[in-house]
Length: 288
Image (cartoon, rainbow, N blue to C red; front, side, top):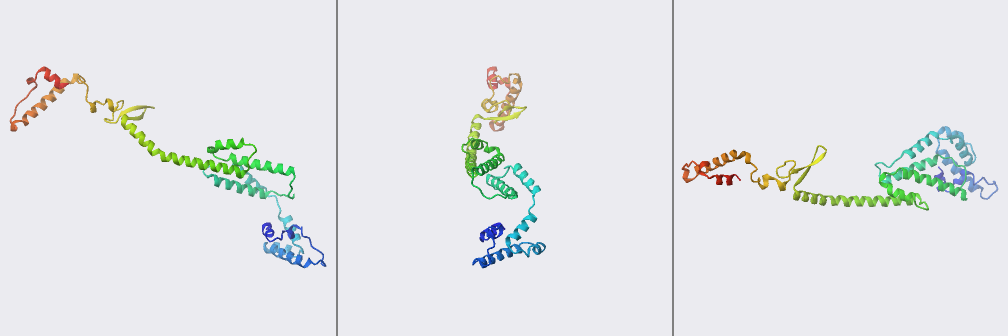
């Protein structure tokens, strides 16, 4: 209501700063017309019961004072709710802009619940009080930020003189933008890093597995734990004498292979080849 009257340059009729002039004053008719206009605006904004109780006032200021004294109550539950909302509001999953907007909205609503009967003053004492109030608001705002703003928050708290709330928001916004750009660059570089890591793993031919709380090496060729591909016998061959205890099996396998080879020779003519036809040195060489 105050905003509407002030926009129409008629708030003086409501607060009493434009008092009723004498009837013989040349400006009386102009004042009376404007006073009636403000009265009609007030009457059109109230319900019927209130309408009848203020209809017969002569001046708009009398109407306003009656409404003000009747409905001006201390909305303590609402103030308690707003104070609690301001104290408990944290950034959480909100971005910086949404958190700042919501916090500022609560501050404005809380300020609107305070009853102020003093007029504007430009003395030093009032300026000190306003500075103290803004400092409390800034502390509440910084306390609700996420921990990723810890560094820039510490810098702001140590700044002298203290910056305003708008300047602090701009600093935090720049810090958030820089971290977003840095995260995007880091994400873009990850595929290349993975490719390099995969290449190095292929060259080393080692696969680390979590086993029993510690890492074991696994061969990438035969998938055997505790082995690496550069020492894999299945890929590079077994060392001489490794199957010394299994010589008879090797000889039998060799005899079977040679017998099969002789069967396939000379157009199917069978020649029985046994290990007795080989010398001891030849057999040892073959086994090795």
